[in-house]
Image (tube, rainbow, N blue to C red; front, side):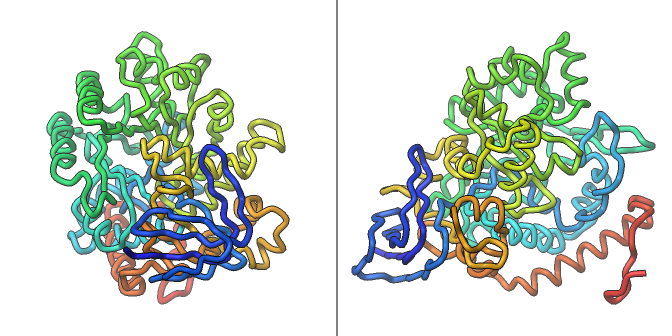
Length: 468
């Protein structure tokens, strides 16, 4: 029986009744939490010094698209997008080119570099909605030791969910969406529970506006039959709202899915920004989960109604989505933008947003063994240094984490008691070698995109590290 001891930390247990234990040892035996005590004197195979650190349940990054981030960071952050569209619409052409033009090795480098950012950003569990390279992702789960919940998005191409052409949003060929749904079922059959149950498979219909009604109904039946989740983009932009209203006689996206019997505790809806009267009540009644991406929506000059969901009895998880993966940053944005929207300094508070990224996400994933540090829970842990000039001295450890820390303060993350990251380094890979491969792949893609006129005109070109 392998034993890991995290010594002398400030332990926030999370869960239904969170407690804070100062200067305690956390004992993880055979992958699960065995004890929290003042000074553990038993045998330890692995010891981690957490003195001066906050120890919290492993953070769950509840919605990402691996491989979509590295080569488009900084590309359209300051650019206008159509009023009915989303941030990704401005990037659709370049993202599509990446999937089509890069070799498997090049795309694998981008995907691993993206994964490194997610892990260094504090996540121990990553919920991946995959548009391509799912086999690469599965290899990374095995190699790097993190926990993942994976779904094949259908339709399975970025172009098919919309891109900008001549100033308008157009939709590419979605292909055979039914076949893609069946591929997701096959992936569940062959891979669910692999790597000592670190990999689980869910279903991933892209959204109510891009998936035919009959396939949404079949997805719901499969979820009931297999006991799996369905994760989708929901109420994320006006283009979706207008499409749904037109085909449903004026219903909102949430009303439309409720009329299909699609909603329930098995559903994780990402974004949920454009909601109307009655929508929050439907989500609460059906126990549908919301995944909140505060930083991602702020890039569109939007604030999603995070606190409205929490106050309305809706379970909420936290996600970085794509483009930036510092989970602590997303906790801070959720709290700060939530206060601005509510015009209330007191809500949401630090413990509430941290609860969403731990117990809230575990509830959404239907994983009672995650999201808390309790006896029998999985040994998924994050250790955050509270001794930097930015986050110390410490009056309240949770506020120091949420309002003053960043991913750079994460000293360790563990999954099943086994270290996954240490001092910003992802274990089990050569980060420098991956960086070089990912940068080379991005440079080649940018060259191809520039030839096709797909890059923004205001780009600062660089040569040998010098801007001009």
